[in-house]
Length: 189
Ligand code: SF4
Image (spheres, rainbow, N blue to C red):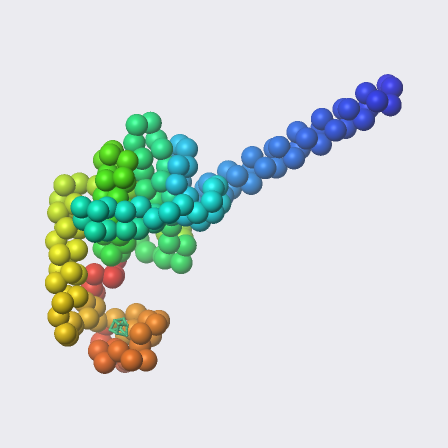
């Protein structure tokens, strides 16, 4: 075989191998993120595109950045990844966060997502965006806004571990200490 042909063959083989490696790496990242099949149209992690601006709803005075939005057919599905979470079912606070992203997708793209996805360390949870969840989100936002006007607000949990990891623990009067009794709350699955 002539030398130029051999060089050409080697280059083609190298290109093929590099391409296969990139595809494999891309699929791995895709699986890790728990993304459904589709096209990533919004990526706040910088893995597939530059970090975008936050989504904003003027009507509900709400802003936020889902980790991803994936286009599946006519739908846009928000995906939130919590790599450190391990739980058998989603935390209610995470469900509400995802519902807020569904609302932002609805307002910004004029398309109602039928569901969003929560990805924990070892499990992926599709969460249906129902009218009931939407109502629950509005009620929670209203409560949070009225709490902002109050001078004192009691914690919404009784979880000393949460206080132990909280950045406000040094100046928070309501903080719980190790040994205080723990009980299930909004932040528990
Ligand atoms: S330290 Fe205070 S602000 Fe932080 S989690 Fe505990 S109660 Fe909430």
